Image 1: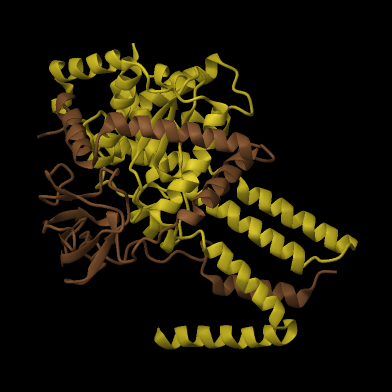
Image 2: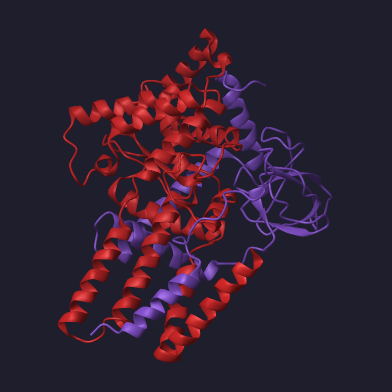
Length: 317
Length: 191
């Protein structure tokens, strides 16, 4: 086993020496610089992710105005949502963050997985409300969770709202936004490096090469549907350990399905970028069955249901 | 023309870099083989110093009386606060003692809230990260550029929101008590 590893490295070194003799030092130095720049975004500190998330949130609130916390009603709404998110996050501390255990929908390297296990939020989760009846929900790096009035009003009770919160929270906890950012950042570096060093000049071959590189870059930049399945998976587990019924995730996804049927979803809409909803519903149902996720019976007593119903109504009815 | 030696060098760089596209190693080396028992890796040694990675506004920036998310808070921690590891072998929580806080507090801290590296003061790079985040989000939503003055105004509004939210929320210790109450009132938690 050890000899094999040594052989692999000896081969790599010999290959390196051979390539070096062909290409020269300057090219490898440029390649090294590009790799270093790419690796800079691999292990950001919680504060760096927070400021990056602030930039993302700034773009979100350019499109949708967040509510100000000026009136007692708005204060109740913000406190209610933030307490719910804080409660679920604490209760779900033990829920797995392993990509494999969450259904293998995303591909995280060993180091990226370690980063997810150790992910801490600079200021915790901060929930804000977007003042629009459009259906929109975003979990950004650094702990910002934005829900529109449209998305909140789509939920019929606290359990469904908790499912929506748990789903968006999982995008934060599982580092999805940062994974997309890292991927886009690295492909941009690789693309500009390849354009400069592999396809220089103005010949037809170079132009064609640059075109291929740009095409590859735009493919890498795309949105990752696997993250939605992973977020459904973590969110459903989080609901169960928080005492909510895990079926609430199916119910909220069904609401989204009804909304999609009733409204024409345009390509620029938030929901247009999600995978087919019926597939997500089936996957969640299967997860509840195979993992035997159950509700805390204490939360199903008439008294408990009334308490949740009253505070949900006090905030949003 | 395509430079073939350069292409070979790219290939080599790809082999050596160890980025996300390389085959994944086993998921969790600290799962005891054969038994399936789950055990966190021992990140630190007893007596070693670790530093708080998050601000005192985060509900996790606390020393708790027991290794349990709902345990009573013993002390609120500040970003960069030094702590001495007393018991690294536990799972999600690490037993620590404060260093240089003016008083001695001992208890359990959530493992991801602390790290071996002291957080650097990134005051000079904050704006850069914010701009980077905004540019990336704008690109994802199909906007070609970010208008700096509009971004500045949006960040200002965001700052106002954060401040108002912090004013109605209270500190880390108060937050944990409120979250616990939320679970109890809704009949969600067992306690």
